[in-house]
Image (cartoon, rainbow, N blue to C red; front, top):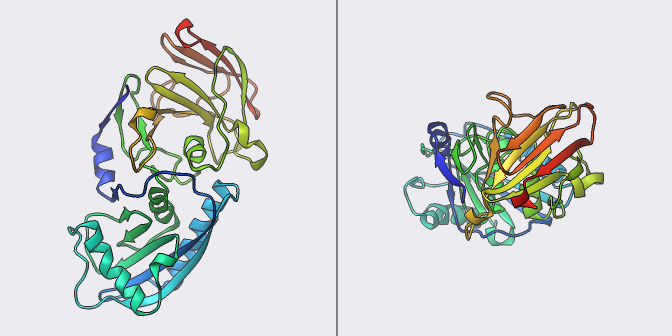
Length: 317
């Protein structure tokens, strides 16, 4: 089993966004109503229009990433007065959220009628930017689209997306180090693994024998070949094209399905040095190897789809 040791950077980032397991994990599809409740305990440091713009950008990102299989229908309240007592950052999750539900209900917003609810609260000085509880999110700073998508991802059942310079049987992991997924530090696209778990793309091909394989760039016309998966004793290696750039390049994430929990799917670890330190992308002509298990050679032609030649050890056949 692959182990995860959180590095210093991961611990620092984890302090900014807290996760309270509760929601459970399932496919997330269709049209979902999203309510954003603005609650003030003093000054209002940003406008309703600022928040509405960020929410709309987040909804567009999710629609694009899911190929339209999940669409959010946003509603944003005006600023509401929270009263004299701010939520305590150290309270239990239910005690933290209950007063905010009451503020919304007092002006006619019944949060139970919405699929997802975000409370944007001005006033509390907490040691985090956002916290998730079930289908609800509390954000205590001006939200941007990336933070909203990240927090909604937790309500979908997604954990943080990690990264590692050293990963094999043991991974020394930056808990939020993924350069591309919004569940890490990136904002390019959700990973193919995350999309498969959410039901946005079909089950991706698993390698069962040596041979030549194709991996396509992100496209609604190629959802069945967004990634290639190689199953090994330490977990699943997910190979997919680097998102967001025209030039072809392969990235690799390691997933150990055994680390899934009641609330969240198994976390991913982006390999930051699959070939050499400082280069997370495997480029045309390079070969990625896991000693004693397999090798993947990327064709020299710099075009898409990426063509791969996979060799397997006898133990993986």
